[in-house]
Length: 160
Image 1: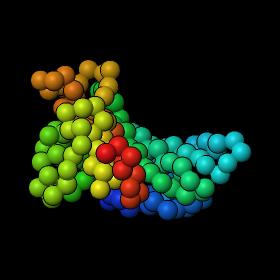
Image 2 (image 1 turned 30 degrees about the horizontal axis):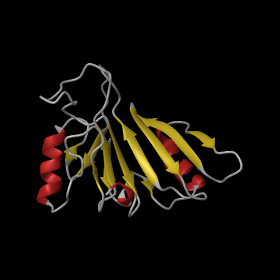
Image 3 (image 1 turned 120 degrees about the vertical axis):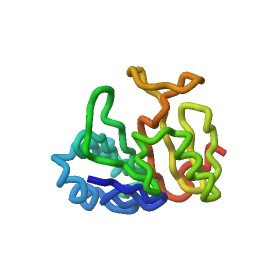
Image 4 (image 1 turned 60 degrees about the vertical axis):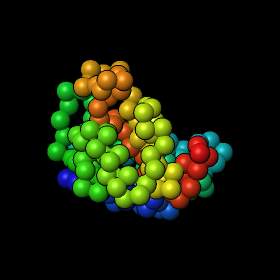
C-alpha cells in the first residue's frame, strides 16, 4: 500500500479538516483506531497503524483534524506500506535526498541539520531521532526519517 503525503491537505485517506467521525471511518480499514479524548474539550487524537506504519491523527481544534503524523515501523521491522512524498519513500530514502527534492521545488528546509527539520510554507515536519540501531550520517543523525507530520497551512509558522 502507498500512503501519499499531500501537504498541507493530508496523508493517504486522512484529510485535514475532517471531523473525528470522518477520520475514524477513513482509518478503520487499517484496523480498529484508538481514540483519546481530552477531558472537557472536543480535542482528540486517533491512533492506528497501517501494516506497521504508525498513524497519529491530531484534532487540536474543536473536532477538526489539524495534522497527521506517520511513524517508521522500527528497527528490524518490515512493512509493505510506503509513505511517499513526491515519489520518494520518506522512511527508506536518505533524508538529504528528500531535502534535495524539496529544494528543487523551491521549498526551504529549516533546521535541516537537526533532529526535527521542517518546511514551514508546506506545513511538513520530520523527525530524525531514535535510540534504535540504524544507519547514521557523519553528524550522528539517522540517515532516514523516523516520522513525518503533515499539518495545515501555517502549522510550523511559529518556528520561524
